[in-house]
Image 1 (cartoon, helix red, strand yellow):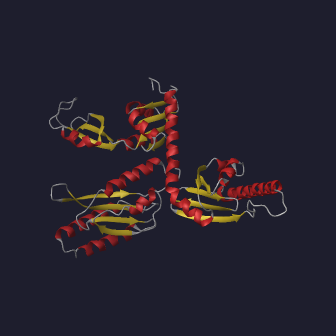
Image 2 (cartoon, one colour):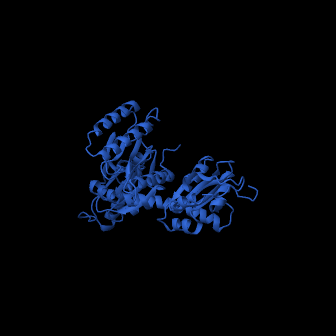
Image 3 (cartoon, one colour):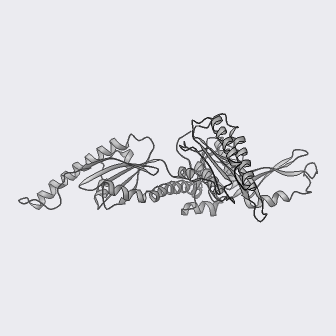
Length: 422
């Protein structure tokens, strides 16, 4: 599998963390456990047993019981792992007040396998789950090259996540625009222009050396004061593979470290826009196929599901605004089953509606919801079985809004046409 963080992985992690962020305890009754790769399960379990003993000193009977119960559940879940996964392991568990009932219930354990290795070993009891270390993983971690240029100097740097590294600075040696005495203005300008061109070529060579060797280079941010960066961009000074990766041209007041600091401040917005450009491109391709009636696009849950089952889907598009659940209704007497999709908020009421309802096959009133799954996860799992690309599209762009509002948030770009016989 590619090491690139997919939009589906980001969506799943963000959804889990948003859910956990809403959980609050009355006291220090919520347990957060981070286990980095390389730790022994037995070592972590022993630490938790010691924490269970320490918790016996808590004065409040309720808090003491809730903390110890949560620790026991975490130990039980931990023992299901023979070894710590290669990226580490994070477990959350604790007593959550029940709305309006005046009581608490142990919720969890919630297990998160991080999408990349974690370096922290942490056990903490608090009135909230400590998700901030996982939130850091939602930040883009692909590498961006940064090239700041003006006629006096150029700076080369890389940005990976929130870590900026300056690779090198080079100076041009080009004199200012005011000519030396004795030189004609025209000759001075001609000589200066030749020096600028030579400097641009030198900058291009350094850019190729610094950036082409980066395997996961996502894009290049070109910046600097004045028009020099635009002049450089117009020419063919860097390798075409790098030129295609220029994702933003940014005005900065400086080159050097001060200019890098300016880029760092604006980087989150630049990187977010890069993802939005990708999303717009994906949805626009889908819209092209729909608008030109090529037969290589379909939308709506029923049609997309049919295309997935026929292994015809190249890219599955799912809106992050989707809030629906796929439920399986099953008769415990005869095994008859059927599926239904509904808003997630309607599932509880739907489950309660089966009381006394006879099974359409055996007429016994033993229908129940035996399975429920978020529609994004359910369709994504179906797609992953056929090596289909899955893209979770935000609603932050006009195209993303259109996917959600005009096409119901479920669409597909097809490999082959979907026929009535498929």
